[in-house]
Amino acid sequence: MSQSKPKILLIYTGGTIGMVKDFKTGVLRAFDFKTLLEKIPELQLLDCNIDTVSFKEPIDSSNMNMEYWIQIAEIIELNYNEFDGFVVLHGSDTMSYTASALSFMLENLAKPVVFTGSQLPIGDLRTDAKENLITSIQVASLQTEGKPTIKEVCLYFEYKLYRANRTTKINAEHFQAFASLNYPDLAESGVHLKINNKFLFKPDLEKRLIVHKKLDENIALIKLFPGITNLVIESVFNTPNLKAVIIETYGAGNCTTEKWFIDILKKTISKGIYIINITQCSGGSVMMGHYETSNELKKIGVISGKDITTEAALGKLMYLLGQNISDKLFKITYEDSLRGEMT
Ligand code: ASP
Image (cartoon, rainbow, N blue to C red; front, side, top):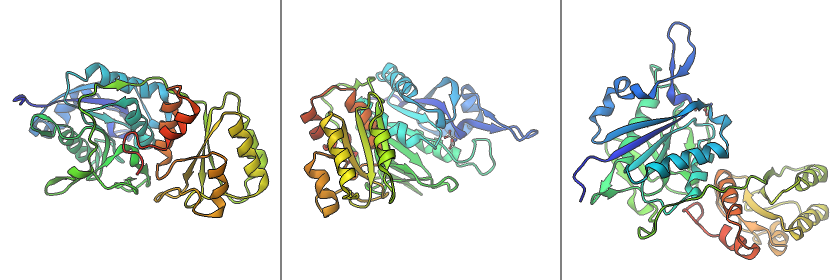
């Protein structure tokens, strides 16, 4: 059993959490993370050692892309043996996308990677940043019999720890900005930090970490709405180099049964382009074949995204396309839960 304090690496990518307000001008500017321990002396009360690393140019998370995801994955890979846990500070706007993608990129992860951010800058009087940051570090440093308690990518925000690939940003103003509607919270912070052990991901500890950096962005996402025209659908499906399309359908995976729509889908699938059915409802699951309005989709080979979030559906797709697997295996693998992202 290790006697030394857990070592946590704090990775700052940008976003509101790393900003301070200039009291004279009111302008928000990036905070120097090297001075973190001076600015938040409470961190010294935590029973762990903290190191920090920052993106050269911290970004607003609206500018996130696959290259930045790879950069985060590489920082974790490079420091994996030296640290017991990782906390990624990230803008809340696209945090669920990045954290979901990272859950697929980090196969056999056996240490915590906790994403967090805040609605108000760290220097603001009523900030939520301090609590989010302090508890995320605490969660990342939790140990059971000398080994990290949490062994997955998660997201901590406003007293709750979630499985990252189950989250969605649901509110642009409330401190409670995220929700995980199809999976229970992994932990809740109150008077006690309550960990829901039975819901934690249990990786195979015999396997070594594999960091996947090959992602394919030749994909599209369509949200159905009553009145959507074949011109719109056709123009998306005719995108050059397109390899897969995620369709956000209604309710339990239903869509119009109009012939033109089903014909376009059939033609697309026959060209070798994958079509994935996810629901535009925030909670619940696709059940193809449950209604007549989804039966045809099942028959023509549409892939079911079950109860996956849009954010995780995109990350999983980019990751799986990067794996170059056969058509037959692709459908089976996509419909399987790889990192606890679907039920
Ligand atoms: N626009 C900011 C970002 O996502 C908002 C935030 O940090 O919460 O980077």
